[in-house]
Image 1 (spheres, protein in one colour):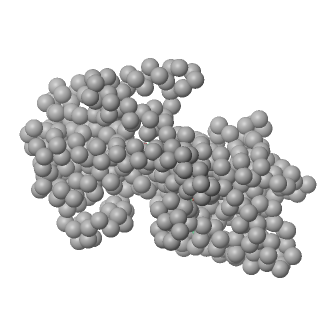
Image 2: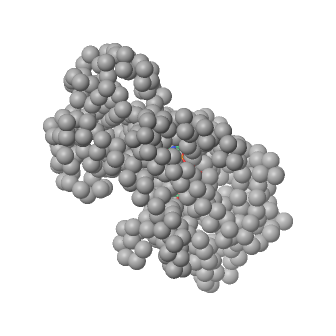
Length: 460
Ligand code: UDX
Ligand code: UDX
């Protein structure tokens, strides 16, 4: 039975950073090194001012403060960290392919393959290699093949250990996981990883499966969660035309213990780095095996999500007398959910894009997202020139500034602070009639209507 003394994680992003920080915190006798090819990111993780960590997650600064320098290290020396480790986690990104076969659906595994080749080139002792990144089913096969054909005569065992943390609650999710999933073929290697999690996770919550079940389970978990959001969002549109209230419907169905109350909150649409990417992956895999009915079924979850974002933007345009040209629309929130600075696939990006096509003037306020990131997100769409994005979109650092003289306010992220604003003051500074479009059902309808706002919320 092998004991793990040193762990290396390749990829210091939203998954690798928090996950390995918690492992280091909970396993003080194991040395954990997180490496990344992005040296600026490593420098930020090493910043003595913890408010500069590259990932914002509630509670993460405390975990890093406790373990960093003790048994948690952030380094740009990838080769050295690989060579010294007994166990290597791969936590690099696997974006949707933007070229070639599977473009727009399949996962781009280029970074995973680069990692495997680097491990193969550098390793001179046996390693357990753990897939932390979400991968298409049977990626482990490719990893194995690259690692085993290197000629160094070193043994590699591959494990799949998908991450189920949600951003914004990552530290809590890592400390108290519903379950930990480990897929593999070699019992000793599996046991080595079980031993690590056993430092803080009850043994009955650690489940072991074969590699392929583990890889597929991650995609399926995200597909099921996203499907619930799309299901309730589909009903939100029906509620708006029938006079039903989607909150009441959610509550009524959620109390059925077979359905359960979570992930039934209607919204402007789901975002984040995982849901869309993982479903597209599932769809791509199904199509590859000619299972078109299966692929169509899951694809519909994405199509409905796209529809929800467009519908929200269209409703703003229609309500503002069919034109938003030159009108100031204040966005509250840009992140894909509260308590994170992550904006990947955020609904806000697509709603803004739709309004900008109509020459609206969008002013964005988000408590954690930088101006640079917001412009990057819009430029990435490639729908208009970077100059036009900067002409039409301004970023405010003060929320009241953002909403002054606005024709309408759109709530895109459910940040708590939005609820405690001085809404009477905001109303006084806005154009009349003063519209609020609440994509998160966050604000208090009664309070806003009493102040004279025209208030629209999804599904009501
Ligand atoms: C990513 C994937 O999106 C997710 O599917 C997977 O489960 C885990 O990895 P995340 O951590 O949120 O999630 O990605 P990101 O924040 O982009 O971090 C990836 C890091 O890997 C980046 O810091 C990047 O610089 C680094 N990287 C990427 C390398 O160090 N080497 C590479 O070859 C590629
Ligand atoms: C998700 C999974 O929850 C997590 O297990 C996996 O590891 C990664 O993907 P994440 O993307 O961080 O996590 O956030 P999540 O809380 O799942 O929210 C995803 C999106 O769905 C957000 O845009 C959120 O606002 C939206 N959502 C969620 C709703 O619109 N309604 C809901 O009821 C729940």
